[in-house]
Image 1 (cartoon, one colour):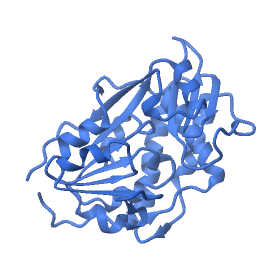
Image 2: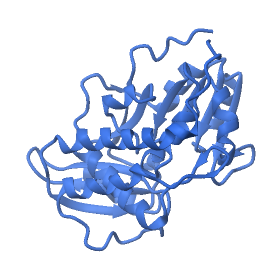
Image 3: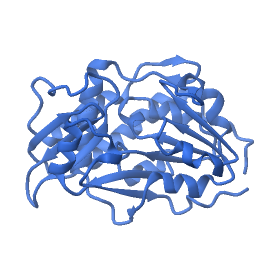
Image 4: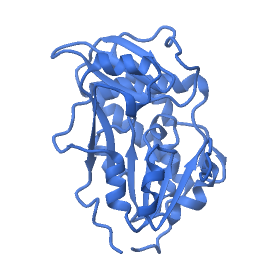
Length: 282
């Protein structure tokens, strides 16, 4: 691997964050508008169900802050396009909160961004090149024997750790064995493979995190908030591992009850990756 080139650095983060959000919104708003039939803010997930031709469609996004089971947003738009516009707030998150760790959106904008992303995901078609598969499987295949960094403590990290040459888990609320998220600037530039929670897109921190990854590293965006938007594969992300909602009612009912993604019915894990995703030289 070529480790001679430094990462772009935190100064590139805001412009990259704005480009990522614009790419998702452009893809979503290119689709025909649909009415919002239902929106939920569960303790873990936000969900939006849309009506329109072909039956209901739905999208999910992780909640990053806010009260568990909040009833919704005052004056929430009835149009999917208008609701998706709430994601625009994630274009310009505040500056770094610590050494190299971008600070997320304030509480008042976080739920609007989560519902906006969920609406955008409900609008988006599934790309023809998307394939069934979980993010943890991609991470294991790409990271075996390599230095891996994970932003966000996923339930599977303990099971996979032994397959990697080194594993660092960065977390805003660290558990035993995790590192504080504020150490991102020290950890990410040395990783061969980086997995980032999809919620970094709508909490405003993804651009800053990507700017810390060295050229040549493989980056996976994973979780319910990861949009299957091919344009993101040209903006520093090498693989997108998200979900497609197959049963809108079941998925939103589960989200409203506070269930995490792994216990949710009506969803299918899928991924979209660059053709050269697994071509890591040693």
